[in-house]
Length: 114
Length: 118
Picture 1 (cartoon, each protein chain N blue to C red):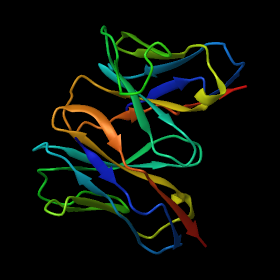
Picture 2 (tube, helix red, strand yellow; picture 1 turned 120 degrees about the vertical axis):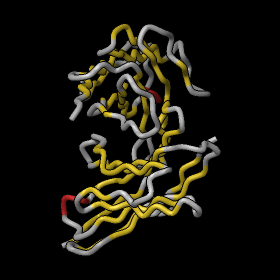
Picture 3 (cartoon, each protein chain N blue to C red; picture 1 turned 135 degrees about the vertical axis):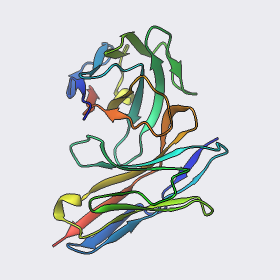
């Protein structure tokens, strides 16, 4: 069975600062994918970044980077130079070797302050 | 990028009535669609997985006779909440994936439907 854990229910971050959102996972699949999504108050799910279990390098997408530590089974999201528009709920998710369902963590509410 | 359209974005209905929510893939063939439910301040909980042309697979604890899912074409899946009650009030969101089923294939999400049952 797969399990995704986000231990930070919420956090404040000051504008222009970096913030790290924690995510740990557990799976017996040899191959899997890790995702981060952003959900603003409007409810839409916005894809941010993807990391494959066999990828050698950490994924980066603009201001988003994923700190992937396979041995520790962690996939933390780093948002650099936070902006007010980054205030949202952030979800870590995982998909198994044969595709299928995307399982989500509990989410972390981020509030960016001026 | 791929677009998934979900309608309606919000609906209010009387207790006992049925509500249909549509999820369409606009520029790709969605062989698999997923339906999630989300309560306020909580995570997305998978309700069911639907593959085009076959019966949906429901997660444990989800009543298949209550939440009817139809995936009749490669671009359309529908979720019907039958005989809705106030406890069914929630945010429902669909997602779709294309012809592949690899772990690195990202899912595209609809914009969600807020259902309020009075």
